[in-house]
Image (tube, rainbow, N blue to C red; front, side, top):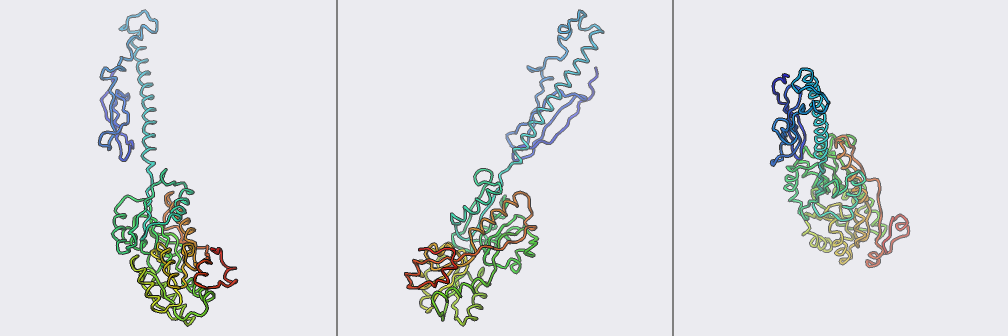
Amino acid sequence: MSLGKKSRHVLPCPAENAHALRTTETVGALPTSHASAVTSPSGHWCARLDSELDSGGPNSRHPTRGLHERDGSRHPPDHPAVATAHDARADRMKRRAFLGWLALDAVSCLAITSQSSARTPRVVVVGVTPISQHLREAFSGSLADAGYTEGRNATIEYRDVDGRPELLPQLAEAIGRSDVDVVFARGGGAVAAMKKASERIPIVAVDLESDPVAAGFVQSLAKPGGNITGVFLDLPEVSGKQLQLLREIIGPIARIAIVGDPVINAPQFQATESAARALTIQTQALPLRSSSDIDAIIETAHKGRANAILLLSSPIVFYHRKRLGELTAKRSLPTVSMFSEFAQAGGLMAYGPSLREAFRLAGARVGRILQGANPGDLPVERPAKFELLINAKTAKALRLTIPPSVLARAERVIE
């Protein structure tokens, strides 16, 4: 029987971290060797030919051998009456073997494809300072609710520059060159650095300092249009409410010190100074550029005869909230912050959006992007939950009496 000319077919078959090749040799329309998918030492190709039928291996017994013995025929094997039956049975056996090999190879290829396509997504969280544990839990918990659990089917890496904003561009460039699925940027400085470093990687932000449109992060709030989305505050009226709360608690204020990052808090400085002028309060702007500035800034506010301090939403302010609470209490300076954690750490008062809720929203947004959503199609979110916290213990140490009208509006009074 004429089997025809040998031909060679190459079929793509994914393998781990690479594309594999499956090679099947056929003689005419029938296979003479079985290709099974394996990974080569290089990890880039898979092609193993088990030429059992041609090599005389353990499975290479000729398909027609002994057929005349099994079918009970008395004719010799070379008799014309037997040869045709032998050839037909041989063809059927070969075809059955081919179909079996084909089914096994399909299962092997699908299994390898499934393994290679299930690559663990990588999320990098970047900020000026180390992330607080409760915010980390809020973010990772929300991401887990979206189907991506840290350490199980998602990798989350936390990067920071230890309170030195000038190092953010270098860190962002390193992240931009790496294989990252989504970046979660904490704070305006981290967002700006990542935007400059990569227009390819999706970026989810929690930025309580920037106007995202004015800063060029997004084209519009409803349709960001680029690779950035997330939670942005940019509500200048918050500082006006903070000033009014301070006046209700401590009475008339002649002079207030405003502490924040001169770059990322620039819009908040302007808004706070405008609100203070409307209340005939003099302002003293104190730039906080790094963690090492904290002690000197509080001393400057004290020597400048400030009646109170208003802390803007700098990441350095948040990270060093306990130290700031201790220093301001030592200098008898009533202080308000946007972060509820400041009051919990010993500061007098906090009024602003829930940072925990913002991180929860960011985790959900990262989950949507990992599921295939385009960041440019996800509208910018605004914090919906605002909290007023009063630390009654600190008020007592400062010899202040909190009016019942303020206590009634507080979500929490820390005794």
